[in-house]
Structures are given as C-alpha cells and as structure tokens.
Image (cartoon, rainbow, N blue to C red; front, side, top):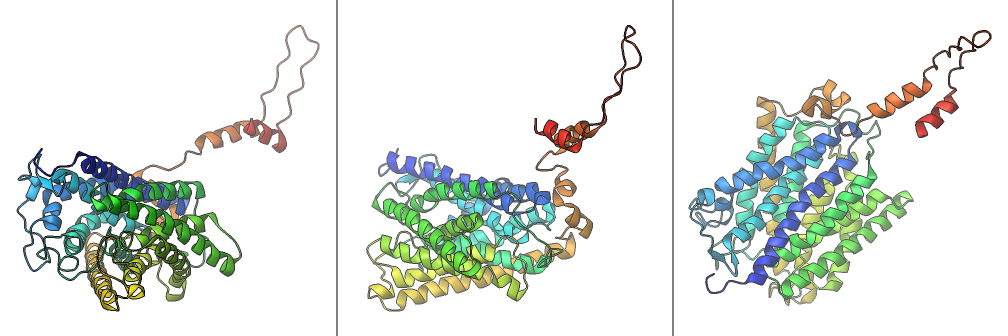
Length: 457
C-alpha cells in the first residue's frame, strides 16, 4: 500500500460501513412494526429496495456527483469518476482506500431515501416509490452530499467546505433532507382513508423495538465512523451518540407522561431515534454535558412536534417530519450554541464565547437544504403522480397494499384458521362393532370451550 495508508483506520471504516448498512433493515423493522398489519411487507420492502436502486446509481454516477472534484462553485462534482472506473485498488482518501470511503458513503445514500418512505405509508404504489427513489437521490441527495460532505481545502462543497456549515454525519444532508422530502410527498399523496377517524395503531411494538435497537447499534458506525479514522474524534462522536440518545428517550417519555399520562413503548423507541437523529450533526463538536442538554431538549421538542400534523392536517404516517426534519434541524442549529471549539472544528458556539457567527452558518445550511429538498421532492412527486400515478386505488388501500402490490402477506393465519375450523367441526358418528348390542351414540359436537382448549393445545 502507498505511504500514508492505515490498516487500523481502514478496518474501522469498513466495519462502520457494515454497521450503517444494517441500519436500513433496522429502519425497515422500525417502520414495518408501526404500520397496520395489511401494509407490513410493503413498508419493509420500501426501505429494502433502496439497497438495490441506490447502490447501482452510486456506482454509475452518484459517487462522482457527490465526491468528484468540484465542477461548479461547490454545487456539484464533475463526472470524472463515472462507473468508478478510474479508481485504483490502492488509491487513498486520507489514510483509507477510496473504495472503503466510497462504500461508507454509499450506505448513507441508501438509508436517506428509505427514511422518506415512512411519511407515505399505507398508500403508495411500489413502482412509483421505486422511481421516486431513483430520481430523488439523483437530483437531491447526491448534490446535497457534495455541498455538505465534500472537502477539498476550500474548493469543495459550498456549504461545508466554503461556508463553514458544520454537519459531522448528516443532520442536514440526511435527516433534514429526508424529513422535508417526506413532508412534500405526504402533501402530494394526500391523507390516508380514515385519517383522524380510524385507529391506525402500530401492529407490532416488538418489531418497532427491534428496529430501534438495530438503528441504535448501527448508528455508532454512522457517527463515529464519520471520523474516517480510529482516533479520539471517533471516540468523542461515539460517546456523545450514546449520551444524547439516552437523554432524548428520557425527554420524550417525560413529555409523554405529562401530556398523555403514560410511558409508552412506542415513545421510548421514537425518543431514542430522535436522539440519534439530533446528535448526528453535532456529535464531534459538543461536549458530553452538551449532549445531555441536546438530547433532553430534542426528545421533548420532537414529542410535541409530532402532534402538529393533526393541527395542520397533513398525514405524515410514521412521524418522519417530527423526528427527522425537526430533529435534524434542531441538532444542526444547536451546534451554533453548544460547539466547544475543541472537537472536530475550532468553531465555537454562542454558549462558549463564539457569538452568533456559527449559529448563522448553521441556519444557512438548514434553510437551504430544507427549501431545496422540499421543492424538488414535491416536483418529482407531482410529476410521477401525473404520469403513472403515485397512490394506490381506494379499494387497494382499504384491503391492504401487501396483497395488491406484492402478492404476499406478512403473517400466515391459514394454519390457525384451519385448526380452529377443525376443532369446531362436529365429530364423525362412531359406528359400533358388529359384536356390540345396538348402535353406538354419536359423539356430540365440541363445545366452544372445548374447541378453544384444542386450538391452544
């Protein structure tokens, strides 16, 4: 390997990339448990398909757009690395191979559109969704990743490298980006049938908890891995991720108890995810004490925010806007208050004597990404809706998308139904042997109580 290569850093980044990849199936479980049973598979595969579509596009042109040498004032990378054809096995990005760096960033590109899917659960055509993923990552995510993540000594992305907007692991490029796109699509598709009238509770809280646990686990790769080296910065990002997540869960549950009178399992899972979202942009710039403050504040804030969809009348099915848009924006803005100047950047926030300078930069990043992503997502969604149609028919929505779109169901109840039918059916008449005197009395049909015992057995 060439001079400057680090085997330890490379191993760390490759493991981190694998952890981030696991987050997409984790998200599928998290979202899949939150929908009604008739849409479970559709929700799972809406996340899972991003692993296929985005991976192919990343190789063809996505990596070149996001991380190629700047082509125009920090807005987009050039196309010199189409197909990743001119990257050698031993080419380095810092202390790690370019292929390792590309694989790590690919996993960010995969999960970002998957996050959007929760806003339109229960009502989107799968083919239309797949087309949206391809168009949105091309027009929105790849350029925004260049703006935020591409550093080239002042000649890289216009937000991060040229204007000093801090986003360590994707509060703006990933979460805010996905959250406002989810809002745009929710407005394009409209409300679910029965919104605010019918109960739409999660069908499987164990799946939700499993998904949030996998997300929490994978997020250490997401945040600590963004140091791109096994060093102290990665350690700071790791510990801050854990602290803020735990604090946000407490903040969410505390607000929930005060407002609704109960500590819910769904609240614990959602609070943890909120903390993960909010700490993502800030994990390398603030202190552990700052992480507690950030987590508590964002947990309570996002718990309150999700109720606004009922007030304003938009149907964000799985609270993508409240958790990812609001959490990502809040975490990015809080850098302007809590940055210590001793982590991944010398910039200081307001609370550490830095004045309002960094807060203004953070507000610029949040505003630009929000407006760009919302506008383009709405236009893409409208174009798809006007051409091939984005929403399933009313009949399909009422019956459930799983059978109509995938010809499958998440759970097979046929065995239970057969057992129940068998237990409730009358027993056949017992015929006496020829040596017995008279005919045997037929057995009486099983009573409901006896049938239930047999089904249980």
